[in-house]
Length: 338
Image 1 (cartoon, rainbow, N blue to C red):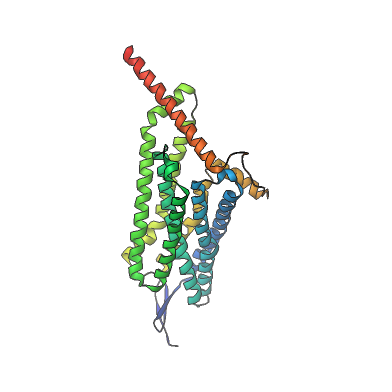
Image 2 (image 1 turned 120 degrees about the horizontal axis):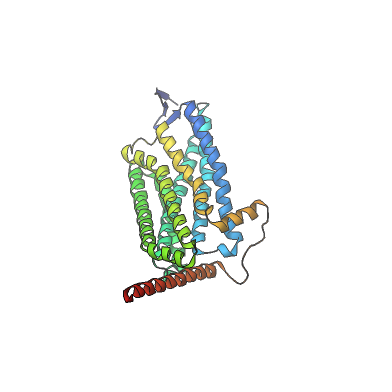
């Protein structure tokens, strides 16, 4: 086999026939391996906790949490399989070995899992938007059948994309990746913008409810939702923008130190997701403590399923809003009469 090598400041390009392999410089390899191994440990533990938490707590078995669990499965494939394979591939490069089998296995798993994770994030945003904007009929909209259809789409499309990424031109699939993720990102931004507007529109009644009853629960919930939304959008943008930019601006050059650092950053998003979405939820924190103490007993509130609990909470919120509206109307009438 005839081997030719071209040297650059970022690494060495080795050509073996029609196959080219970019060997990175050792300083880049060690840095990427450290980040990927750390992300593997944190992400695998976090995503495994999310999955086990939902399965072991009947009170958490709601449509929203099933979406989180399914996304955790996708992220688990990234952190438990994809990133270890990338670490092995990078480690072999230290000895000057470019193992195409490991590289292809990593690409297949990473492309399928990462695209599934992004698509899940999009569906979760839509689900949250429906719950907040259409609280009265959200249960009729979010049926089990529609959930299963959406879940099938969320896993089938990434499977097709993963195969196409391996068999079709990298240039074409790179542009398609940017387009598809861009659509998901637009959907996420639109959903969370509508959520924020909905919250702000109820700002007056929220402050009135707090002043009349002396309870700041509604204001605290508003603050936490706003902060969580900001964290989700900012972290997603930081992790994915670099690789999306490189795939659009340099679609024919999906290699090199800069590209691999951007890819590593995008992969680490799968290790951050479980802590963003779940650590801020008190019930998940309590479930984490039980699991970490090896208390694997099925936890639930007697006589109440997860869906019933979600609807009861929603009903309580609607009743509180109704009471607030009544108080606001009464005050307005009183001011007019005075």
